[in-house]
Length: 143
Image 1 (cartoon, rainbow, N blue to C red):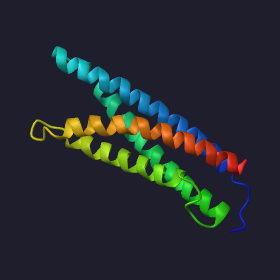
Image 2 (image 1 turned 120 degrees about the horizontal axis):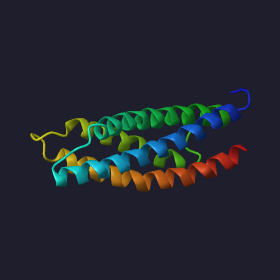
Image 3 (image 1 turned 120 degrees about the vertical axis):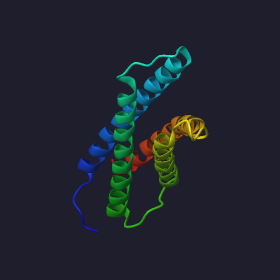
Image 4 (image 1 turned 45 degrees about the horizontal axis):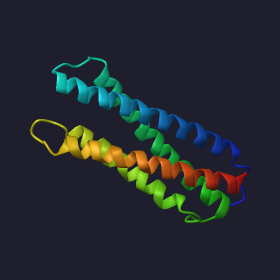
C-alpha cells in the first residue's frame, strides 16, 4: 500500500498502550481493595464501579491497539507476522476478553468465575510486560 507516514498511528498506539497499563494498574488496585474488603466484611461503594469501568476501558483500548497493529503493519509491510509481537499481542487480547467474560460470570452460583478472573489477570500482568517489550522493538523498526 502507498500510504502516508504512520507516525500519527504510532502516537495513538503509544497513548493507548500507556492508558491500558494505567487501567490495568487501577484494576489491580481496586481488585486488591475488593478482596481485602470482602475478607473484612465491608465494601466501599465506589470501588466496584471503578473496577468495572476501568476494565471496560482497558478492554476497549486493547481492541483499539489490535486494530492499530493490524492496520499499521499491513500498511507498512503489506502482510502480518513480522515479529513475535503479533502472537503475544493476540494473547493479550485473548486474556483481556477472557477476563472481561469471567468478570461478568462472577456470582454465588458460579464459584469458579472469581478464581478464573483473578488468575487470568495475573497472567495478563506478565503478558503486558512481554507485549510492551516486543512492541518497543516493533516501534524501533518504524522509526
